[in-house]
Image (spheres, rainbow, N blue to C red):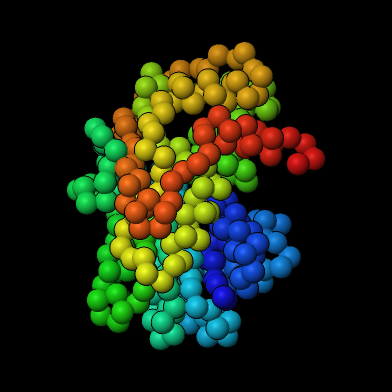
Length: 303
């Protein structure tokens, strides 16, 4: 079918676009290229350079899209703390624009939400019905987006599913700036620079490979799935253990540099994936070692 992917020139979005094309869909990418990269968009997809903060109805009508995978976002937690209005303009208004465009034509919406930034501290793997206690404007905006999805479903019958992603990593994640820790570690190891660990490194996260996330996203396009689903591995990996995996695949013996812990950082975040297993048959299949190795390989010159 014809599918729009917002943020399709970005890290996760470009992998989703490739997978949709591989199964024979017609794909239109909506991306303002503020973070996304034009070269990430396959030639078989159509790129619309456009900001989701503007109405999307014309693009949806002109393309005849039957589904919208909404991945465009302001995804930096620290930016959301410093500029909450900007964060909301992208993550809340952008989601409302997607829903408003989907409503008249009955298009299905698959929304990229977040796990760690919504649940807060997790003593055990968080389930979809656990309390939502966002600690940042980013988490609050994503939770608001889920609320709008529910409201549009009740008001207008807009079919949707929200996917609460764990810490996604993999090829094409920017290893510079405020990127995911896997990309940062591997980028620094590649450049021969020391890796920084804030605090004692015991803080843990649910690291899920982008190929698995892409597969879950496509499975969520099925018309009989709705509500909220966690997309993770159910495995909590400490920063120290993650660094050892990164050091192993890179062949480095460099020791990390420890710096002061960052105020407000979660100690533990991990997701229970049983809901997604039952609803869409999804379980993460890529081990951390294999996923990090694939990411390392993608950073090599010529790849």
